[in-house]
Every structure is written in C-alpha cells, then in structure tokens.
Image: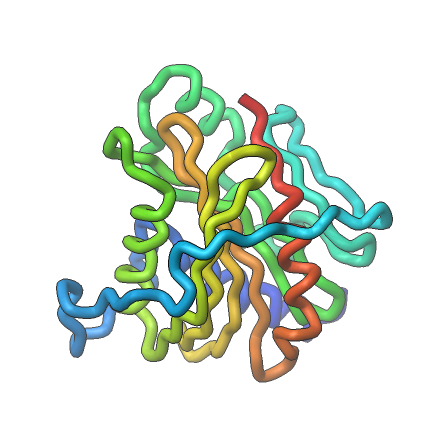
Length: 228
C-alpha cells in the first residue's frame, strides 16, 4: 500500500468512525438544525430487498473468536496494518456483553476492509442496544437523525428491509459531506440480543464512482455472519 493509499484510507476511516450510534467527540455537530424537525420519510421506506449470492472468488475473514465473519473481493484487505491509529474494539468485550447481558460501554469498530488504492472501504461496528424491543428500523431512523446533525450535507436515497442469514436487517443508501469528505454509502443495520451492528461500505465520490462498487457492497453486506 502506497503513502497516498494509506492517507486516503485513514481519512476514510476517520469519516466512518463518525457514522456510529454514539457519535465520536471528534465530529462537530451542526448548529443550524433542530433535531426534532429533520426526520423525513425515506424514498423507498419499507420496500423489501434481496442481497446477491456471495461470489465464489471472494475471500472470507473470520475473527479469532469465531464470532464474526465477512466476505470480500480477493484484492481487498482486511484490517490493514497501517490503520493502527484507529484501534479496534476487542471482540472479547462483545462476547462478554452478549453472554452477560450487560450492554457495551460504547460503540466501536471491529473490522476494517479496504479496496485497492483506497478507492472504497467498509467497516463493521457494534454498539449497545440500550432499550428492550427497539426494532432495527428504529435504530436506522435514529442514525439518520444523528448523521443529519453532524453532516454539512446529507441525502437519504433509499431504505430497504432485508434478511441477512435469516436475521431481519435494514439497509440505507445515502450521500453526505462529513468532515469535508463527500461520500456515498450503503449501510446495513442489524440487532443481536443487547447489541446493534452497523456495517458501512462507502466511497469518496471525488475519486470513485458508486455505481462501480454498488454490487460489491451488496455482496459484502449480505455475507456478514454473527454467531450466537
């Protein structure tokens, strides 16, 4: 990976680390928005979608504990070593939370994926599900509210309900400007016991075309497996 690729990847991860349920302190909120007035219906809310079959050529990453696996194109890289500035949440903390019923203390990233030349990237994040019986759609809607507060531009393109490995999930597609970076993202939300999982795949629209990566993103999102 070249210095330029590392720089783009780090900037990308910085943006993605703001797209979490509990927004990081490094992302400054907009002051011109009233949170109570910014939720609008998504263009295709409630539609039922399907995710493609995972291509046979894809590689699969499984964490050391066996809790999470995800597949991706063979020329992508999982957890690039040059991104140590953004430490991962220990998987053992997630397992302890799932087994004990005690919510995670905060939201964190578990995995980073990076396309060649940093043209596209994905991250898997997990956070506490603090209220019982909250649906995955409610979590996704709340995320829209939070991102709108922090982004200088946010356009929700579509929302769809899908099944991922038999688990009810929600996918959102949106464009935004956050921290001066224009991105086009596809985000998968799912709940498991007392945790919420957010898998985000995105591009920087100044260097990549979303249409070139949309099928890959959907395959990656459809491949994630969380063992119970």
